[in-house]
Image 1 (cartoon, helix red, strand yellow):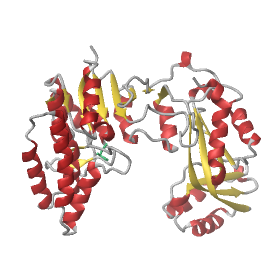
Image 2: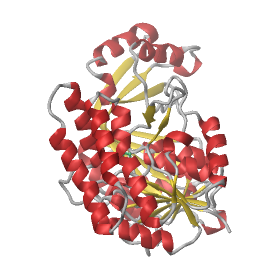
Image 3: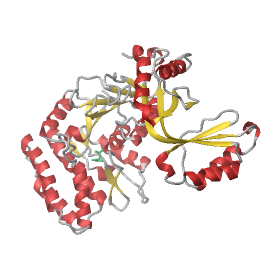
Image 4: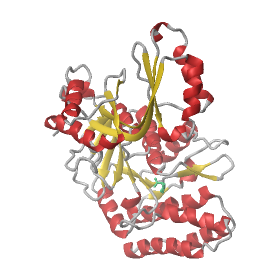
Length: 442
Ligand code: ASP
């Protein structure tokens, strides 16, 4: 029987009612042997996340402001969960130890990690699973970098001793024993690490949405969900702004060839989205797309020089200007005599004039045009590779809406076509592209 690792996000473990749903989910499938919880998230809009409150406690101590009131509010949230679930867990001793350490000026990482730690203890008792403290099994090196191989060794050995266990997300420890957290949202990473170490059949990531949507539901009201997506497609989409999973969460399981299944704790019967390694070619409809994502606020620097194609070192000189100004670029579409640099506007940070001047001196181009306020939209999918007509469908849809395309970039992978348009027609363009492919979507 294969093992399933189930990670539950903050809203899935925000209060006792949500814990009950988690228990029902875990118990409905005995393959769900390892469970990774986040700290309690928001119970309603406007509510506070426990992790944010913990960081606040830390800051208050740093600034010599009383933190007790904030800590009391955190304690109450846990007390309420334990009480309403009817558990016998001796919570008070944990709370007073944590309170004490915060008062003594414990590190931000230690303080923040307690959100997951306490939730892990509670969930372990509630499910009647063993508790494995993440500090013993998730390791960082002396520079604070996650130590993948050491962790995998320690954790896989440890899991052999526990048939069923809860491992809190988000943190681990440094060689000197100090607590260290991943970046925000990092419980997703812990879930992926546990899945790899357990050689799980699937990594289930339970959250409060039913997986990925073909387009942002704030823009396309009736967007269809994505049932299946490959890691590569997901990477393209999340890079362009679609978010459900922590970026780094993908790597450990991808490497191990373990699929991720995004599921909704509040609608467990919904099929969710499966993220797989290789496209299932027999199931892909030629000409169909998997998703659309995009971002606003790019600046395009378009450089034209006659016979640029035969000038050796042109692009290198141009890029060295960016390097000198410590600016990274996103895309570099080029033609015979033109090249465009696409940069996130926030990166430029008042340096645009300096960059343009630098390129003038280094490359002596005929013209340089600047297009500020650009948005990029990526249309992604294996269905478009080797299928004629997909690009035409995108361009026709935009043309019909009278949207001017300023830039086109098709990645060499052929699973991604990016168009650059003005910021103010972004939403209209996403809707138009979606409509153009709606007939393919189930
Ligand atoms: N609790 C942490 C955060 O809010 C980690 C997580 O939930 O994944 O960032």
